[in-house]
Length: 419
Image (cartoon, helix red, strand yellow):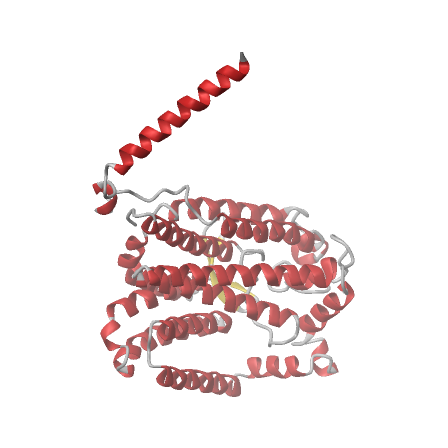
């Protein structure tokens, strides 16, 4: 009896599917709504592997921020805080960032294309406002933060996303001038130079290097003449050389980087680097174990921000550091792939925006890792998605939400819908 019922059910399904196939076969073309692009974006079709890697980096960052900051209340500077203080603030920043990312992923990329110049102007205004003595908050001799109560906002983080938006929008508007170098590049150089002057006043040379790299990268990928591109790159390098030559603080940092174990620098400008190298050296292959770092016990300054990777190296060893590098490499490569896919679909702004964000995240990660390993001079740049810092995490997740939106719209277009 059961076998008879099963056979009957299979026959009904075969008949139903056959009738559907026949109905579809009667139509020589697709439904008119698909041809005209009337099918809207479905947010269920997204890059799940990209989201998984982002979540993995954020989750590891939460664990390591807690591990790196748990002993900080032992320092007189943070004596009034509990051992969960930095973890709680980091979780609050992540909650705000995830809500913001969920909102941004709902917004079409066309909106950001229209608003890119406005966002860039707003970022410049905030860079001016933070320099005002009664507004900007000074930490370690740098005026970089605007107090907002629940968190301190760092305008330089917004400027990184703003320059990626503006550069992509600019190349869209000036496609006809790509071969005419000075006509194509001069407005962008002026914009970056103005932002750079404001950033150097904070001072925040690390952020200036990042936004200059983003701008040059988008110009190059947008098709600006390569020979002239290398010319402007040489000019920027010479500018940095002049800045270092006439700035005693930065020159001393370079000398400390070149010889950190010199007694002249070991307890001064080379202090962070030497202790970061000690932490990574102690980690060896598999690390001392989660929570077993010695350098985080107020020996290594900024262990929960700029030097989080050193704590990862000490506690999780070479394996942990290599895993973090591999995840960031995959993330940057995937962001660039989504950008190339958008350009192939004739969505130039979306593609250049993704590639600009990829340059930002990849280059900043490279600098942070290089600083922690002693390959580059010390810079005040955090490890994206992982280090403690509300503004940085907020802008990182918002930028990746834009990348995810580009991917969603790419998938919709490839399925015959509309973006």
